[in-house]
Amino acid sequence: MHVGRSYRLLDFAVWSRRGALYVLVVSLVAVAAYSLPPLSGFSIPWPIVAVLGTSVALVAGFKNGQVLQRSSDALQAFATIAAISRLLATLCCDFLDKDTARRVILRHLGWLTALRYSLRRPMPWETAGKGVNRAYRRRYYQIQEDLTTLPQALTPLLGAEADAIAARPQPALALLQSQGAEISALLKAGTVPTQVYSELMKLLRDCHDQQARCDRIKNSPYPRQYAVVSAIFVVIFATLLPFGVVPTFAAIGGAGSPLGTVMLWLSVPFSVLIGWMYFALDLVGESTSNPFEGNANDVPISQISRDLEIELRARLGDTDLPPALPPVHGIAT
Image (cartoon, rainbow, N blue to C red; front, side):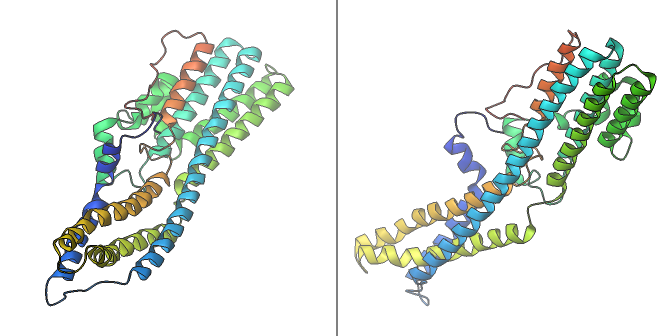
């Protein structure tokens, strides 16, 4: 997630340059078609282009509104997980013996780590693998899940159990099941009051709920019919746009005059600017639709998890804490 004041215009332009290059090529073709025989004067009526542009803007606006809601849901889920984690630490430190409290809290952090790695796994519809996004990540930031494996991340929290948990088909779910079994054992042994047991089980249920919420966002893409239609409409509009802009600018300068020639070529940068805006709008929506994949606009689950680990382990009295993950180039991961 970008947490700086703003993206730099140059960075954003480089990231979204492919759309501009496409419109540039089409604009040159449109100028040639309008100026050279045998298609001299070829153009598309501007009202048709304007109607198509309005339709594309409505579709893109609908798409961006929906993907923003997905991103907000993902951020809210991790905000809820943070609240659950702090309440769990309070109950464990206040009502459980020191060793049991440590075991329960570290297992909870292990669950959070396993969930984080599960949410970072690549999916076929995601955009983190696209060239522009890969290049941007290499240049400006890295995510923790690319630097370590799940067993390596779990070992400081779970010890020898880490490899066995990581080998399970669903490590996060396995840790929740193990957590529930220990809480139930504490009740049966009479080492935890019934009221505290009830609160711990409610928190465990909330962990299941938030994991299911995150899995729903991760495993269900933004509906492909809307995403594909939006992208196709943008390409159609960007292709037809220069053929409507060229005659409009030529008419302003007057046919056959030197000013007419200047205005004819001036249509190229204006076509590129308008087409780039539409391409960039669609690209922003597509890159925001998967809030866990690790792009620059995604939910910073690595940073949230690391901050919670530092806070909860400090609550246990640990002094050898992992370093925080500050934003890099204004991007929190």
